[in-house]
Amino acid sequence: MRHMKEITIRELHERTGHWVRRTKLDRVVITDRGVKRAVLIPFEDDEAPPRTLRDRKLTRAYAALQGRLGPGRALDVTDLISEDRDRE
Image (tube, rainbow, N blue to C red):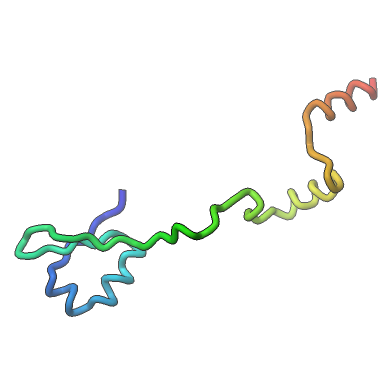
């Protein structure tokens, strides 16, 4: 779990921008006379598209392997076994 930084309302008023940017690192708890009153947390964009396997970056080796397979041909273990058996 992240570390939570505690600040007073006065500190929040004096350096609001700093504390808002600090939420990239950890949550910021705001206290009023020693009592926890609020928490600043980072904003998460719910409308951002979910990451998929298509979004990943391929290594050179994997891209080369993918190129040898040819378009539309999947790497299927049963195909490999069949090819191996046919050679015998």
